[in-house]
Length: 234
Image (cartoon, rainbow, N blue to C red):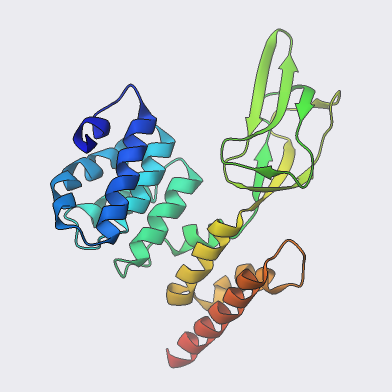
């Protein structure tokens, strides 16, 4: 069944589901999953972003998988920031810090611009939790409607427009703070490979703010400590 799902190009969710199953088995050191490793490598170039995103995570579950390291390095140039981030996180498990800049970027808010000019006909509210690909605003330009969507999962920090307003192409519409899980994984990775010039991004999560959970704040402190100790040793 897994083999069928991996080949189901008409239903990308089936491919994702199969990849998740494979990743879970890999984490349990199930040797039988090796038969699907060539498919896992192939899917690193799949046209659907969500498939590539899941695939990048899966390859991090086994740092001995043939072709995984090379595929992940290629994915550092993926057009999707989430795919680049997941590839960078997985590379840390290979002892490879090539994606450090992509990991730091996971801690930074996403600034979202309008790709077209138009009048805002619908918009999310500040403070709303938004999933990757979630709708931030709709723009009307003549008879055409354009949707502005979030490239990451997180919380809508600011919205620079409202319903009825006009926006021009390229103008900043919104800022989305990264979600807790994304921040947690990035901080854990930087604990291992972070450098001194990464500290501003890390220190931002030590602030006493209601939107920063205690475990994130504590991890940011541990990551800062590890980075400073590593710098002293070097």
